[in-house]
Image (cartoon, rainbow, N blue to C red):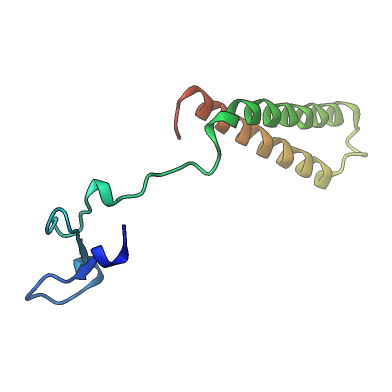
Length: 114
């Protein structure tokens, strides 16, 4: 919509605050204050294409399972004298991040939009 069609107006006889600003559209007159017409709104598009949800799910969960297995093997094979808390925290953090985002894209893939 060209800028010339949009007029910024304030409600008359009131103090002009940002909440009082509303749009007047050429086709419809004055909408209620604080409301915009549906045609004036831009459609929301996801930053990630929904066609890649299955691929992201499989890849992220596979990487997360790899780090989870690595953490499990590290815990089982090391003694209490050879364990390193920073290595444990790093591996568990990476596994948690990949598994968390993998589950997020799994939910999006099956239609549970969170």
